[in-house]
Structures are given as structure tokens and as C-alpha cells.
Image: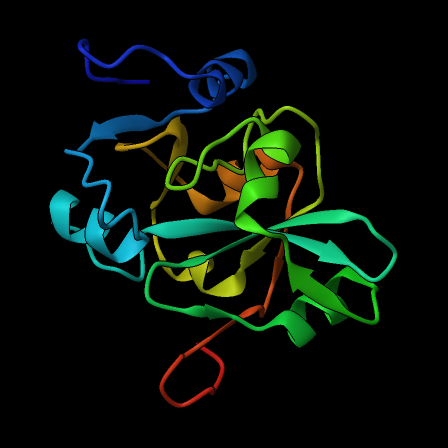
Length: 170
């Protein structure tokens, strides 16, 4: 496990340590005008397909679900509903993200949140040796193997991302 000395450990990093999962921590400057995962990928000099954003959704049964998809992809809500066994899924309002997860916009991690929610990771993560997810703090990313993310988040792979321009699966 490696991490940058100037970055203090986040709860997500502590969870990975507890589980004995290898990871690297990466830090980038925060631009409050652009908290997007695409911007983070550019700052890290990494492929947008390897930097995953974490989105928070609510199902028709009022359960909260988290979805991790590539930075430049769009969440396919119908696919997430199918994968999670729900009829419908919708994005939660931005003002709900912090009360539900304990994380702010631009720093939402699928790991070690305020409560444990089901996590779905787009299956394209399997194409990469490592991917990046938020460490739970704006500007701080964790790089780890996709299968290690699944283990730590007790998540599952699902085809939940689509290309926002063609609407085809990502």
C-alpha cells in the first residue's frame, strides 16, 4: 500500500488498509467550478475510462444504491434498475448526497460511507488492471484493482454505463 505523505488517510483508505487491499492514493488540485470526474482524469493524466465517478440513486422501493461508472459515461438508470432487481431507479437530489453518504459532491466514494448501500460497478472496470475512485475527499483518488474494489465495497459488476452521445452501452 502506498499513499502520498501529505494526504491524510480517508475512511475509504483506512477500510482498504483493514482489508489488506493494495492501493495508491493520488491527489489533484480541486476546481470548485468543475468537480467532474472528466476534469479529475485530466488532472491525473489518466484515461477517462479508468477514472470512475460514484453516483447515488434511489429505487422505486426507496432503497439507496451507489453506481460507479467511467468518468465520461452516463448512468443507464434502466440497466441499474434491472441489475438491482428494481422497477425504477432515479438520481437522488444533490442536497441529499451528504446526508445519505457523509460525502460531498466531487468526493463521493463507494467505500466507507456513513451507511452501507449496495454498490454496482460498471463491467468495463474489468478491462483495466487498476481503476480510480474517490477516496472520499475532493481531489483525492484511490487507485486499485477493480476486483479489490468489489471486495471492499461488497459490490457487483453490471452493465450500467452508456455512451452519452450514442446512448449505446459504454
